[in-house]
Length: 343
Image (tube, rainbow, N blue to C red; front, side):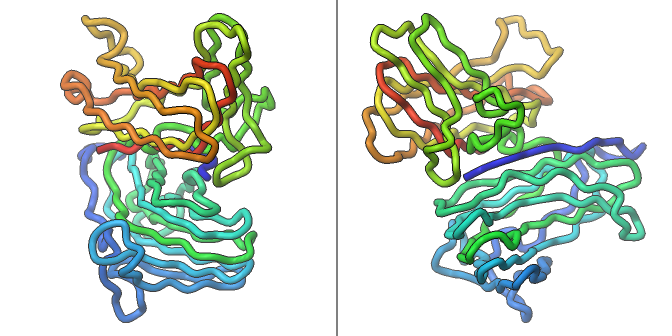
């Protein structure tokens, strides 16, 4: 399950490169030092405790990954300092797999420090990965506030709320700019802060009538909620939920993944749009790539769709990525655990 994402304010330090960012130490968690953690990473227990160790069997890639085991109501924090940081925006991400009981999960965050090591800013955290999940990418985007010259990258496993379990972390990265994976919101459909019945961040659309769209709080693959799209007999042309990312750094390509089940006709597209204020001679967007998902499906199934970023979009400083998923048929379609990964 993925839930919540946010950003914080920024002010550039004068005269420094936009792209300057130190390399992350031991991003693959492939070997352990004397304290059991890879070089560069520090561990700290919280609440009732937890323990971390190198795991060479459950890794997503490379020689190993980090495994964190929690007792009931436990917590464990893994962190790494980064500095000097002189770029205006930083994306920090990793791949996470969980077998956690209760509401506990894995969450990333960025703290900002000055030269003396004092905290001068704390960004809103990433999405939370919880429940029983396969490997999925989580990204947090932070914007450097005035006076910040360093960053503290944090991976929090457990918030003292669950009954225990295990989480695995692999393939961490840090890069300047806004990564596309951190540019979309509410990918697990868990949030509806305005109470309108639709998941926050997602735009409902119906063409022709005969459809009903809502956030379903009774059905969820790994969390408490999903998106539900129902087509009734005699329905019109189509219905969908869609979202356009905030401006982000163009990736070489995009991999869209989501879980779905139900009946009807499921299709959609990934669209590459210019950043706000940028006008294209060829139209309103760079290109649109379509996909479809086979139905009916009684059990949850995952669709994975990859596409290359158009050359003109790659040449831009920033772009926006739009994701739209349709229900065009008769029946009920549920969606959950969407992810968008830059390739």
